[in-house]
Image (cartoon, rainbow, N blue to C red; front, side):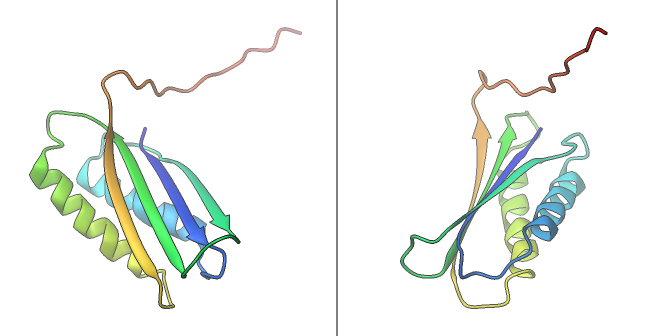
Length: 112
């Protein structure tokens, strides 16, 4: 399950849900086995210069090589930029989790 994190200055007017959806769709266009993305956004009022940092985290898989990563990074940048309507400093990071990273869904059954 991919993770998306947006960290940005709170003077940047963005629709984080639309960005999350666009990133998730782009990832799934590249790799349909990716599925849904855990997504979170952090706006800060303490900053110098208007900015956004987009971090995307994926699990390592054999087909996610340099070509895959370069193409996905380029397309993610283009997709996110469509939602930014003001000048800002922009950063995007595509990272792969280690072999020892666990991601799953935890469910609790209630006994009544």
